[in-house]
Image 1 (cartoon, rainbow, N blue to C red):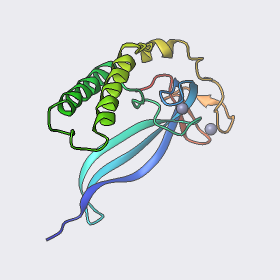
Image 2: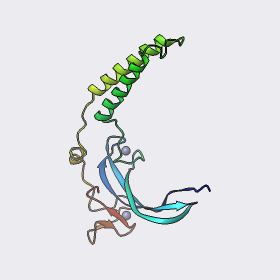
Image 3: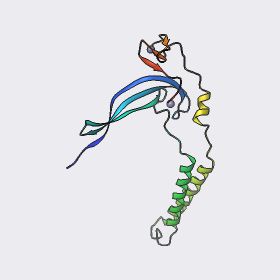
Image 4: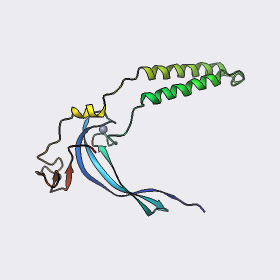
Length: 171
Ligand SMILES: [Zn+2]
Ligand SMILES: [Zn+2]
């Protein structure tokens, strides 16, 4: 029997905002914390609760501000190794010699390998997220960004009017 199942996000809600460096658009931005509850669903019926999940969405580019968007050095080296193995296969006698464009394919495979090595070695190490966060101008602790009403300090920093929490730290 065919069983359709997966993860269902329920009660997705924006719970607050903060200032952070966004990994996607690489600039200082207001980020919004979204929280939802994950369930395993079977035929869209939520059956097994998994728990709360949350992320921070950038208000400038509408992407996850903490996701990884750049290829890391180790991954680049890995791609180079895969391309090198491909070159070895290409130059194995009999692999593609019978093809009409065999020589071009061989040259291209070498070219791609050399480009990948160049790409890996001109890799600039980016400053860490902690370093980038040190340069962020802090969030306004007095007025709500959305409704401009004064913020309450306790039990947590938040706007009483629009029920938005204001975060001074990204968790
Ligand atoms: Zn962004
Ligand atoms: Zn507000």
